[in-house]
Amino acid sequence: MKAVVVGAGSWGSAFATLLRDNGHDVTLAARDPEQVAAIRETKRNPRYVTSTSLHGIAAATIEEAPVANADVVVVAVPSRVFGEVVASLPGSAPVLSLTKGLDPETGERLSTLVRSRPVAVLSGPNIAEEIVRGLPAAAVVASDELELAVRLQVAVNSSVFRVYVNDDVAGVELCAAAKNVIALAAGGADGLGLGDNAKAALVARGLAEMRRLAEVAGARPDTFAGLAGMGDLIVTCWAPSGRNRRAGELIARGASPEQARDAIGMVVEGLTTAPVLRDLSHRLGIEMPITEGVCAVLDGVLLTDLVEQLMRRAPTTE
Image 1 (tube, rainbow, N blue to C red):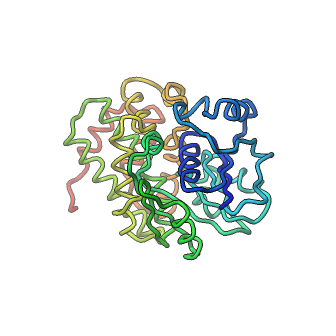
Image 2: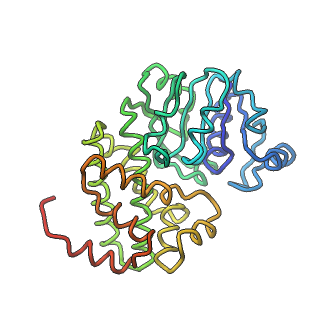
């Protein structure tokens, strides 16, 4: 398979190594010509997963990459530029989206921005730093076209990266977006030192929010109990290197969202997704109190005040 991975961040670089190790012809495409030149010269990404060898992977700018001749274009760019990037891609090769978020402009799922070509999405508990170390992991690939999902499953599946097929594209994408917002809250619990009981309760209630969203948005609730839902939620909320968890922790300790993002030095999708997800819940008429709370904190409400408000909500059934 000829694959072009658009986006040379941590996950894009890690996924390129998965494809390479499965014997595919891989080009890693980045916006920055200096980053491309460094990858070509050193066979390493100078900015992300820097210790990982990219030997056997071609590097090019997005404009130079052989997208028109690719069998699949893997898109691993921030949600805020996803629509712009996919609209600029030449050719008609299927798109496999690795981006976890919603479109900030429209609030739509990202796959809906891919027009005139087949699209699939891949998600799951996939910390890039562990993937490049060859540690075992699993993911789910979803598409409305079963044949495409199976073809991508076969292309990516290996003894260290197990891939399942799912036809619930909406569920997989909403899981991927919502779990980052819950991870911000989980990081806040870490930053305040609230303990494992509080954090586990928060994550469980966060999953309940995600399931409510699924039911109203036309997704399948059982998807939220799988790899894209509970699996990714757990790792995002507990992994020390998780960007969203770390951002929540920094904010709880006094940093502004901008300072937290700068300290992490990479895209923190939850900061972009939180207000988009809140607005979506308003349009759908469902309660997502943790998401509302995260947005309130990002707008300046003290996290300690938010915790008290959440704990004082009227008791109800589970």
